[in-house]
Amino acid sequence: MKSKLKIALLLFVFAGLTIVEFDSCKKYPDGPSFTLRTRTHRVAGTWRVENYKVNGTDYTSLVTDYTETYSKDGNYSYSWGSLAGTGTWTFENNDEEIQISGVSNQDDHRLFIMKLEEKSFWYYYMDGSDRKEVHLIQ
Image (cartoon, rainbow, N blue to C red):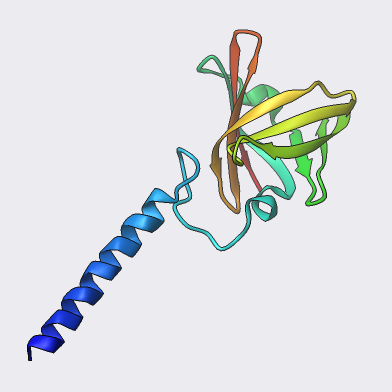
């Protein structure tokens, strides 16, 4: 009977440590805690704006037709009405940031990832002293 109790206790401790380990794997402030999809696969796709703020002020209504597209091979593009641009993207700083390097009609930006899930991608970037926060959805 004592050996069954020891085994049960060991399994309980192992399960508890596993849960703590998964929770500590959370890469971005707003999630996810655990996913089987790679970061590149989660970024890849075409995204549209759900929310856009500059220094905390909501400007979402001004960018309703804005989209960003990230490919798995590192290409980037955006479209906003008649405006469009291209560039490349790479993960930086232990995959906590994305560096956008402009090619055509695109400035260089460092995106600070807040949330990266399959259907939700949040980041902010600094434009001078302005903090621009973008919440994208697929």
